[in-house]
Image (cartoon, rainbow, N blue to C red):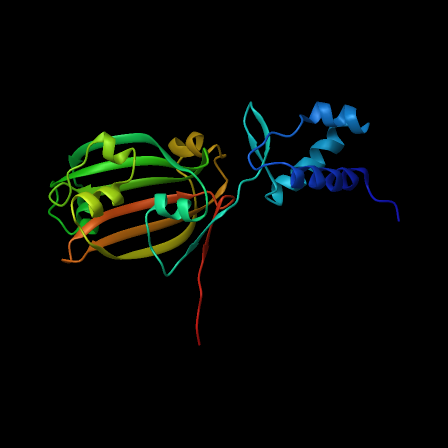
Length: 232
């Protein structure tokens, strides 16, 4: 049986990908079409298949790259993003999208167990692994619990809270649902309006019972997976 041309190219590209480092750009569709004497449509079909298999990913107006190692997080465990990426062997970084001090509305006040109108920090960050956007964190921190500045929020809030302020984080309630990302955050994750996302609502508690953080996280599952282990 004759192997379709696009599958021949898939096999060729898989060998090329295996020989490359992660996050390296492969040749353009035009170059591949000329090199392997195939139509652009055939090349695009092969590349699309590898993107769907998470072996390649596209960056708009830049090119197509070999994928990085996914971050795997156990649902029953909780730690900050910086620690998760470091454990996975990656280089964590953040892009600060919004940092403001505001009065808590009824929803935020309820989640943080504070009075409506109390001052809270709103921190919105794009979290990255080796420069690749993985998730958007939309977080709220009560000012009466922790005082923040841009230097802290652009690095690790958890490290600052625990190592500098001596706060003890003991648990986090996490709720998982499937969703689509808010339109205003699409460009920060380089995804389309209807790209499926994982949404994790996280409420973090200190040892003294106070709520430290309430966060809505939008996760690109192409680069991050949550794993749950069950025992009988």
